Every structure is written in structure tokens, then in C-alpha cells.
Image (tube, rainbow, N blue to C red; front, side):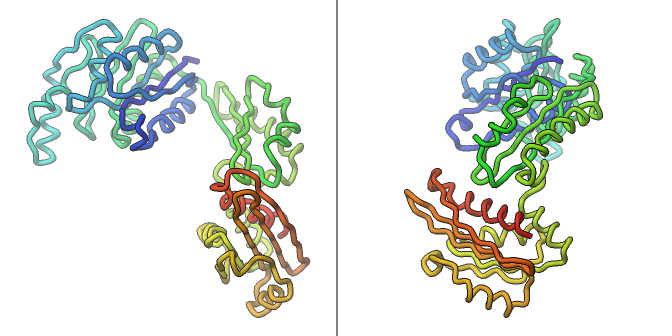
Length: 381
């Protein structure tokens, strides 16, 4: 499998003014096509630094993809930078200038003289027409490598990647395999404990297994390189079976499944309705359950100040008055040192109660509490 690197270009990215979503999209496209992504980076609008990044990338990888810096202004340096990296000049391509002018005409506008800069590409590069924007892309080939420069506008970049770049890569590098990832979601247990249980799997080379911690949730990523999707699925399934066996009921979902969607499914299976009394979380739990479609008959949102403890008698009476099957009561007390979460669940079969404390960053306390409360509900219905 060929190796690839992504260079996202733009000083605005380095300054945190906008988020780099292009790299995430490209990484997934390359993964699905069977290309190993070894590195990604962000470089500001400086031709020399971009050229240096391209040269360094070519010492390690066969495919370099840049995004951004192909606009018409002076601070769009990618064309010049790639030419500098490859030791060539830029050259004017009349056909590109005609395409740019026609595109502006279609928008009812006239191309200005600075738009002409976009018709220059490194000498010897392959021009890639951009039918959905004004910034043409290009590919600079060497005998064994390719530098591919795409616009930074996400809609344009995605269109060109799917319609032009992926077909080019598949033909040029004879791409036949695939890299597929599957994510198992776990809750109710910490990252270090999961590492104790499946640490041996994390040393595998294919499939690979990695952990990613979120407040109140751990993701277990299984990634397989294979000749086909079916083969990758079989490899992933084998490892996923081991993970499920070791973690048991702590695994609640896979890929796009969420705690709230799992709860929705379980409530439907038992034809149970639900009410939530939520203190100190501003309706986060209720909102997530409602978005998932759960049968939430009432959401009673209260400030933490009036809900320091959960009154059993009041909550049992409240459930009976509402004539619901399940009542979840959540009380969260934020604090800089100790953040306390009290949970009470009443179902037709039992009443369960617990207290949990959170010692992580205070800003993550609410998300941890919501995930912990939803997982407690999942485990008790």
C-alpha cells in the first residue's frame, strides 16, 4: 500500500480562526481506498515553508496532498510553493484561464486580472479542471510519486477528490486493497481498566487496536488492512468478538450508535415510557433522548440549587402521577474540586440508586455526568 501525507495550508488554520475539516475528510477517503496516511500537518501561507513540507514529505511518502492556497490573491502561495519544491517555474495554461473566465461568466461576473494567477501551475504539472469553483487543482508527478494540490473550499475539495483524484490514485498506484475501521463504544469503566483487559490486543499490527477516551465514554478503534471489504470485516469481527467477550455489558454500541439511541431501542423493545427529572445539567440528558426518538413523556428541568438530594418519596409519587414506566432522576452538583452526580432510576421492576464523583477537568463535568447518567439508565432497563 502506498503511503500518503496531507498538508493543510492556511495561516487562518494556525491562528485557530477556522477548523481544519479537510484533513479529516481526506483521511477517511484515503483509508477507504487502501492508502496508508502517515502524517498530516498545517502550514501557514508561506511558500518556502510549504515547499519545505512538500520536500520532506516526499522523502517518506509516495502521495502528498495539499489543500488550500490556490486562490487568486497574493497570499495564496501553493502554486509557487510546489514549483519551488520540485525545482521548476510556474507556467501559464491558457485553457485554465478560459475555464476560469467561463465560470465567472456563468455566475454573471467578470474575472479580474488577479484571477489570472489561478491559471498558473508548476511547469509540467497536470491541470485538474474545477467545475464547481474558480480554483483549478493540479498534480505534479515524478516517476514514483505525486503531489496533488486541491482547493481549500471543502465543497470544491471534496468534489475534486471524489471525481478526479481518487480515480487517478487508483489507476496510478494500482490501489486494490482497503483500510477499514470500526469503533466500539464503552461506558461505565475507565480507560486504564480497559487497557488492562485488552492491552495485548493493542500490540497487534493488523488489525490494530487503539483507545480514545471521552468524558464518561471510551472508544475502542479496530482498524484492518485487507485486500477486500469482506476480508477486512472478517478480521475486524474476530477482534471485536474478543473485545466484547472481555468487556461484556460495558460495550454499548458500534460506530454511529449512541447511548441515547441504545436506550431508545431498549425502551421500545419493552414498550416502556420514560420521564426525566434533571437537576444541574440544563436539559442535556432530556435533549439527547428526545433527539434519539425516545418515548420521553416529561422532562422536568431544575436548577442544581433546589436539587441537592433526590427525595425518594417525591419521585415515586411523581412517577405514579405521570403514569410512566421509567423515571430517571439526575442531580449534578458542579464544583472545582468535587463534582457529584446522584442517580435514581425507578422501573416497573426495581428502584436503583448510585452516587458518582468526577475528578477531571471541571469544564468536562457536565458531559461526563450526562454520559454516566445515560449509561446507568441503559444498564437498568
